[in-house]
Image: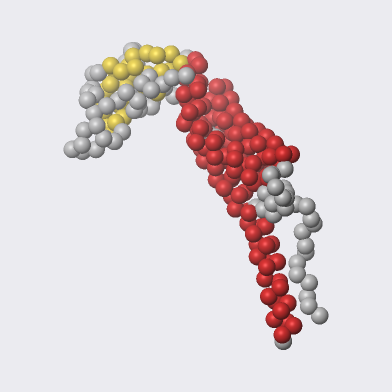
Length: 234
């Protein structure tokens, strides 16, 4: 009985070590992280982020609906997760990277549309026909949406919120940016800027995704072959 108890106590540290290895990665190195794995993790993060953002920009530029909507970015996020799983990175780190990559893919379509409008957009004046939104009894709070018509009196399909304020009234004239090819919906000219400004909204996700990829790849370092499991005690 004492021998069995001692074997159970001895096996507990090994089980906890295997659990930590599975959740956070084995990280079997001493001293600074291996340079090779650091570069590999940074490269994986950069390629994944570039593919996620680039696919949405290409889709918005050429009118490819699936890519413009972020579906291509979600595929790239899934491929990144599969790559980390192939490295046997820690489950928790793979999950964190996956969540960040998916969030980036979901936020990218708006930034891609902003890039297209910044590069080939045309500023024109439209007439407000109705104003909705805001918060009752609290002027200036909430988002206001303006229905507008172009200079020929044709209603614009989307409602504009940039430049639409609580003081805006039907009949007012506001400026919008329209895609000369009509592949991207117009938006208010207020706040629209360069392509870099359009990408600035993604900086937080990019700043988090790259280090998360590096940590996941670095902590996947293994110097020994994983054991099949604890051996039965005779």
